[in-house]
Every structure is written in structure tokens, then in C-alpha cells.
Length: 319
Image 1 (cartoon, rainbow, N blue to C red):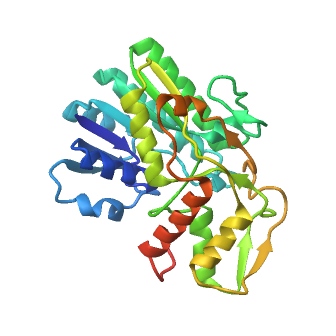
Image 2: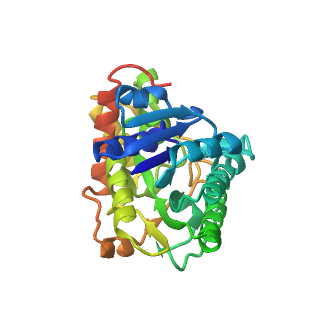
């Protein structure tokens, strides 16, 4: 099969590319390198089953030309604004990088006759809804522009599926951690402690509690859903057992870095930034019923992510 991965040089996208290539697929990765990095894919540069194309997928004509050239069997759409905190500075960021990127890919699929679309959505579409969040009943009330853009993109995805015969898999991600990350709680804590080993700034009050999933487990779930779910429109929460408190993550980072007597300094408030959802819990029974369960708990995912990020860059501050 010939596979397109948008956002393929990014944190999650590059791990997905690795797994697809290992499985024997021919993979084309497209990325505009705003957040993606060529070095994430450098080890595949001589692999004849892999091709990298530097392109903004909002370039509809350029993307359509690529579709005609490659005749993709399936598209994994991961291109989006993943740095949610930036929306407070630039309100167009998610409109452009999260919603319009999705429209552009769907339109190219319509025009070229491609019929399989795997969409990386987010828990952010639920907002601050209380209780276990399931796929079918919501309610869907995003409080971030990122969540709103993902929800709008889901709507376009299901509408394209209905009108143009595209089979879709909508996969709602939790917080994802691991090597190659460019931001996020573990990444930020490690960088801050490399700059100052005596004090760690923690956004909010440190009591935020969320499920965290290791990136390679996420990729495993994503491919399992695509290979196993058979409905015309498939929608699944990808989750993990348990939640982890932010202060606990800070303590784990300090421990893995071999530091002591670090003073935690909290910025205050019940959340890290405007649009942050301080607490949520997924209902993952639908995915469990399909046959997949995360092999690690949230806390175990955090621990392995810390170890892998530290091993990836033992000393330097990651830019």
C-alpha cells in the first residue's frame, strides 16, 4: 500500500512513519517543518520505501499534484497546530494549521478519488465536561481554539464521508509523551531544569490531573483501529489507564535527572494556560471492546517518556 502521512516529520507523525515503514508500506511524509524536524526522519533518507516532501498541505494545488502522482491508498492526517498555548497570541493559528489543513487534505481526496482517511483528533473537543467522556454522547464543548478547530474538522470529515464515499477513522488522542517532542509538560520541565537545577516553574497549581499515553503505544492504537474497525465512519477515544498529577510529573523528572532540593514554584490558578482543561477522564470501553488496551498506565507512560527524552539528548537544552 502507498501511504501519506501529513505532519510526518513531527513528534507523533515521525513515529507513525517509522512503524508504517517497518510494516512494509511505502510511505510519503509531508511536513512544512513549522514544528516538524527533518532529523526525525533522517534515518530513513536512504530507504527506497520512504519519501519526504516539504510542503504546506494548505497548498491545495501542490498537494493535489502529489495525490495524482502517488495514488495513495490511505491518508493519515496528523498535520495540525500542536502547541496549544500559542492560540492566546495568534487566534488564526488553529484556523489555519488545524482546520484548513484538514479541509485541504479532504478536498484533495475528493478530487483524486482516495477513499481511506485516518484523522488525528483530540480530547480537547470535549472541553471541561465532567464524568467519563465517550465518543457518542459528549457533550462537545471545547474551550480552546485548538479543540474548536479539531471539532470543526471532525464535522467536515464526517460530511465528506457521507457525501463522497470516503471511509474515515476519527481517533481522539489524550496527552501524548515521548522522544522527539517539541513541547509539553515533560519536555518543558527537563529544559527548565537544565537551565536552573534549583528551581522549577510549574504552570497552574500543579493539581491538574490528566491521562498521559506513551507515543509508541498511541501509534500502535492508531494502526489497530485502522486495521480493525470496519464501519464507514469510525470514532474512538484512545486512552490509558489512570491519570497523573502535574506535580507528580515534576517529581518524577527531578528523580530521573538525579537532582535534589529543587524548589517548585507554581504560577497559580487551576490550569496551566487559557484553554487548558485541568482534569478529564476518557471512557475507553469502545476501544477495549474492539480489542486494544494500553500496555502501560498513565504513570508508567510518563516514566518511560522521561527516560527516553533524557536518553535522546542527555545534556543539551532542546530548542
